[in-house]
Length: 241
Image (cartoon, rainbow, N blue to C red):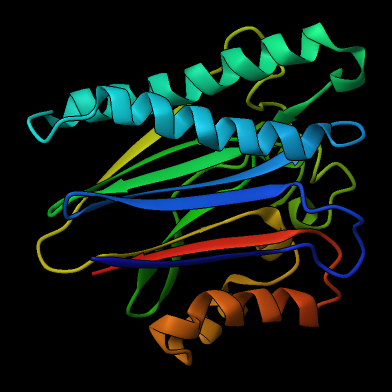
């Protein structure tokens, strides 16, 4: 089991409000990508706080004896811990009003991958014939599509595509989506902020993964986003057996 990750400010932003962290837990891997939002420096603070709190809570609660449901609950409680800290921080300082962050996390052990997400940072399963999106985007465009009010094509270019309806730290409590993928032999996952998925097609992303060495894959995915104009911060984490 191995991982590669990277983050870049992009070509248009004055600050990188994304954050990423990957760590081994024995032979298992935990990876988290966050994309912050808010006023001056608040987005950056939110994403860094979320990752710090997530790893702190997960580390405190993790043991190799946990069963699948306990791991799922630990992922949820780790996001809830981050939510509480950011929500409280935002109310202690008016400059942080509206601060929040997306969060997509993956914990991969020898036969299962556990995914948790809030917001529109994504997790993909990297398959032999392309990418399969695991997570759902929690934004206005996706909500309108689910309600049958716009088509899938309209969703891709909708003006409210980047307006979140769910984020970590904005409300007192947060609803977290979770997914579990079982595998027998190998698994490969991509986590990314919308600086990649929002400007590059799944086919383009898969093409880069297919034609990159594992050591270079994070850097090459970032280069893909930059080649599209680098209009947002871009962050990726790739996990593979």
